[in-house]
Image (tube, rainbow over the protein chains, first blue to last red):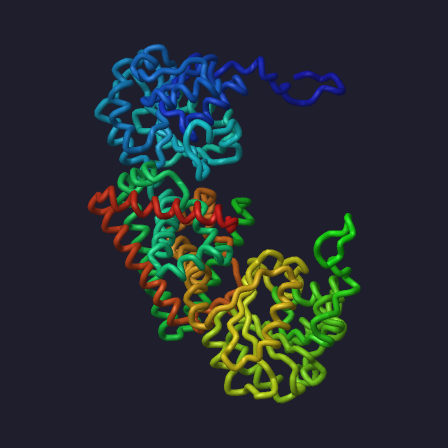
Length: 312
Length: 312
């Protein structure tokens, strides 16, 4: 221990140069909002990987990523990129995870890590499992960050700061692979938590998938109203309706896949919600004031908890 | 027409001193979020009324209003205040509008105007109608402004700026009374629109009451989950759930009254929404991708319209 009077009683914080990148070569497949944010973070901070390669099946997306200068190399050939990867991160829609994993896994080097960022975990793990190799550790992850925008232009290097990233490692996932992926996300500024895949899916069904489903639905309900009323719904949206529409602007294909691939947990949470909404409708019809006030009080309590929790 | 070269081709904008107040004495009954914002606007801008009197049944609220210095006089006696009013504005919960109107109307001077700010119009008009006098014009209004906070401390003078205020005059309401109330709200910075009371209630059921009902309900649904999942819902709320909770923090008594007093329109909108949510659930269960994408696309379209409409 350094006993010099003015020295702080702990190790000095290493400078950026002293932090070795987590990986030598990181391959990001699918440079959309999430993938391009990882690329930007890697390029701007230098602590994720020495080299980043972006892969997309679309030549247009590849050209745009090259134009943006957020990757060292860009290619449409996932297998070719996988050959040189120390880590392959799949950032494609959850419905594409299985096929893309099937194409990259045979090309990967022994010891290289496969990870992905799917918003549903049980179904993505099921889709990838048939193609897994014993010598390629697989670390399922879910960075809970996003905006209503999508594509390589939508990303930014600070997207993950103070956001959660959930890891749902399998029993067979080696601890050092989990640690490497954890470190990568920590260096993106994220807060990490580990949980079982099925538990993840229930939590996300409630906090994210059900709210999105309700938001899409109420927009559709409003859109079906007679013309005059619909146009006034748009005029007067600030009264509450608007709060529901931000998340309703999200990418349709991504959400279609999430809904279909987290079907069981989502339908369970929706069924609970519908029972509760019916109970509220009944209380309104029959004037059950105590029931109505009780449900509203719960809403306030939850909001208060969120504020105390610094989540709102 | 002034033909001097440099003179602008229109009347000069009058200075604040030149704008005569709309009313000599304005009485605001219920200095909560809305009422205290009107009081603040009146005191700070001087263009609504020469004198403002605040009325509340609670001596504590009256003491607080006096402390805040946002009214020239404060009293618990609505009838006594009504005697000297040129305009009485009821800013009480919609369920209290009838009884409060019954107490102030007999005291009002002939020609003085009664107005109110209830969020539901058909039921408030029904509640007030039995007490109306032919010599006291009644102008139902609904300033669509609010925050999740309530009480005299929550108000602010700019609350109504660029917000809508809907007027739902009766066939019997004299045009000059409508004009006076319209001018008052315009001087609060609001945008004005007139519509029939029943149409107002349907529009507000969709843009405001249904979103609040859904927000309260989803909070309750989350609160009913098993302890571990519930605590994680709070941790990970940023993923969409949070957007639903802001409006769920609103005042329970106010919302209970709104739900009960706009029962028919709200239950109709909720029924439409439930049908749509059930259809979405069915599409998810059976993997109807086209249906799901169509509903999501509508959400995006509505959001886009809101942005073009500068409502989001």
